[in-house]
Length: 185
Image 1: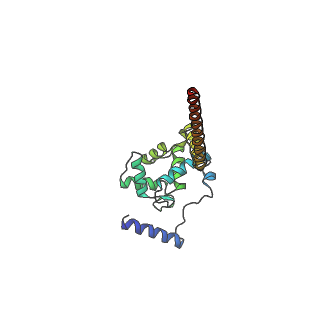
Image 2: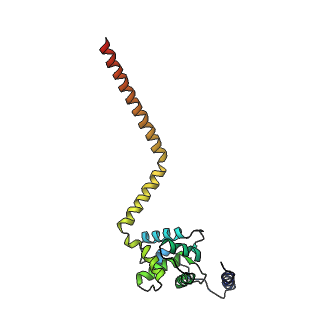
Image 3: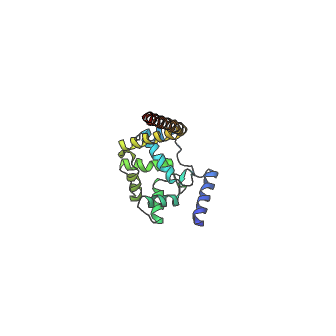
């Protein structure tokens, strides 16, 4: 991060601390604020947000947005990235919070999204278009979680099956031996 950007962030934080600038609107719940989205859609958007919030700071900064756009196949210039952030950055901190991330999808749904890069994010991350596929992946992930939790059970079951199979094979060998022995008598 350039020294000027750092000094701007520190200056902005000092202004907030002094009460000169009000922080962005803080919503009690994104579910209550973004009623146009289902709970499942918001959860999917949160997963996407967390995927690109690489440092787990709760914000997507300029470099994380840069990598996100590259992964989406839409690399942007430094100026383009700053413009994208500025479009939804209500508290002017130079980062995108989850609430601000949700604004991208709200603006896209309203048709008021103007920046092409943000339109690409909205198009690629559109969980409403996933429909049944989204539900399928949701349930598959639940099944995977349960199967991971039941790994110990599966190992026990495999061991029991193996012992049962070995027992059956031993019984077959014993029977075959008795049959051969009776033929020699």
